[in-house]
Image (spheres, rainbow, N blue to C red):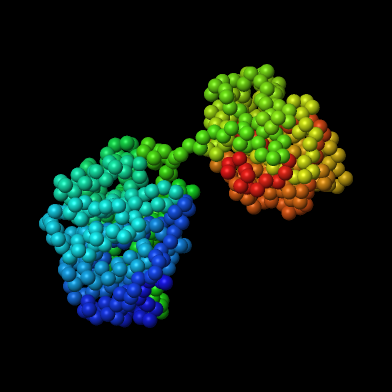
Length: 618
């Protein structure tokens, strides 16, 4: 059952803009909200998705001012959030205070009835008292008020996110789950007493590992009317000193009260940025019309994208909007639509480091039909790989790797490293740090079974790798993570009009000059080459690649995600001339042409097609 919201489609903006008494408006527009609540909460969002939204609503006071009561804009914003909750993956709504103009009973009652719709929908939300909701000359020890009765602790006791309030009831905190972690919203009264500050510090102390959004009606003020820059108010500086600066988990603060909207960034005691934003549109046409600020967290991209929308005006027929309303549908200035960086693994590392996946034993990775499995753990970080080193094939098939060099290579061209992909089974790798054409690489031993394997029943080739930040397109382009010695001509391929290059290797997993993964192979089923292409990869980070052939076609995956340039041409098997596989080496025209520069981690070859759920990153 959907909770009742007013149907705004039956009334144009000009019809709703006339001032009427509170009782009349509530009876005709919001009265339907007193219907029985739905049998089950309707509000749902994905708590594991890396994209979610926090909605912010600033001062709505001019909509609830004496006998000038206009709840329609507030109801329209709530309807907008309800209708789009799944698209937005809306996790939380925070009101920044000054719900009403005078804190009078009729104003509070009218506003509270609109908020009832959120409760019936099962929404997670918070609110605080602004200076217009209570006597501005008092602090949180002021005692009972209409605001406290309507929006105090008793209202939130059935909320799934509500965690508690200060003894006076004017300060509260909520914890919601999103992107696989908890987030705390700390809502503070217009003015904190000494007891209020102590309570807030207690909450922050008890939740030092929970990223926190701190909300205070007043905190930063605009530096001027045009720059969009903010600065601490006198009281805001007290909030910063007492509750933000020493608590690293506070990464974002929100406040209303002042206008125009503005923002600033300050560095806390831990040396980390805290974003401080003013959001307030009450000075705009129709008192801001309950405009909403949407904070879209996208932790895959490591940003928060911010936009400002006006659902009440947006819902009106464009042909009926008056001239001033048409300017308020959506705001796009630098303080209304912007992005801020947020990399949780970096910003939250000091108090909530990301969980580290422990290494997995080789036995856990040796699935059915494993043809070869190489890993490079068990050696001192940074030490040189000796020329006599033999890397065991942990599949037990005898496909061991040995060190090979080119003319001019140095003894330090290949070193053991502790760097690794976070989902790699072994917490180690090899660093190939020689020159692209004169370096050290590895190859399978002569007579290794994999040297002659054609993989007629399909295959999956997986590897972890990381490119150095000084990757050079000309020097490093088309160096290989993994390849097979022996060119197409020697294998009887790329001749007689077939496509391909007779001098290139029969199998190579390489990086182009544009850092695009390339799986270029000559199948046993064709004289021509088949090539899968990835996309340009950012430097200096770990990647996992998997190439899967099911005897019909070949598909490439990067970090478990299928790429677009996977050919549909049927192909089966891998050509061979019986020579070794190369790790970090690339042969062209019967000679080593390129050696890899960067890190290579675990490599696994399986003689069948795997489902992505079976990859080593799973």
